[in-house]
Length: 329
Image (cartoon, rainbow, N blue to C red):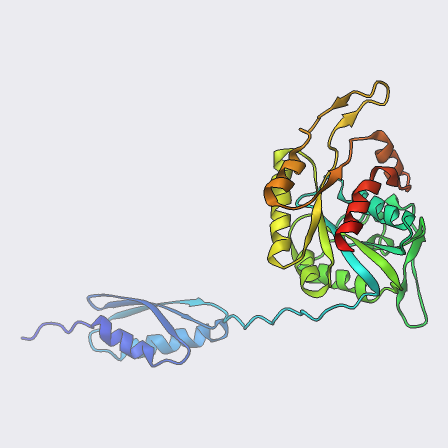
């Protein structure tokens, strides 16, 4: 007598490979028992399981069939990023950025804007830190709401003779924004192209910390004159500052320079200077990376008080601002 017919793996694969839209990941045959692992579009999973079982059962020697379907949605081709340039009525646009939060970037941005105004320029300040807008309080504009002009564009608020716009004007100061990346990018674009920025010499962008969606959108769509990186002097902050610098370099945005904030503490009574965070780290980093070092800002109670009170204190930033103007003129 002839022995019992045993199904072959090759026969099972042949039966399965004729099924439309099915990928055969694995086939195991043990005597008359067949197990097949397949993948297909989720919408076809049940149909494929039935078809596969029927196809395998036509093979001689098959006694039992187990079908496992891993349904994976086919990836749609990613839409190309919108790289259409945003036109802003400003002679130059300067981004003030940092690799991490908590280094005083917004204070630096606001005071640079005010120092530029004091030097005779028409200046705008855009708070692009969507998740943590602090410019409304720093400019003394908390609680105020902008209006629209006859063309439907938002009229920026005014403080210290500069035009100011922030997402913080649209929401309550205590209301968190729980937005995903596309919404954040959209808000940033709207605050550039849907705001009536008119005849500016310089628009200062107070960027969110890090190297995320807003920074990428900005580098692709905004004609940036250059970027200023703010860091404190300690190593842990400089590591993140270096990432920010490299990000701007990769997208061909010129680095105007590095600012060392909270560089040292100067006692108001005796004048003693204490290097709380290790003074000079940013200057050494700038030299190593061959970028300009714009200067250092002390850890000063007057800066803290004026920022919280909505007043600029440009005397600490005039030297930095002069170098920025010299670098872009």
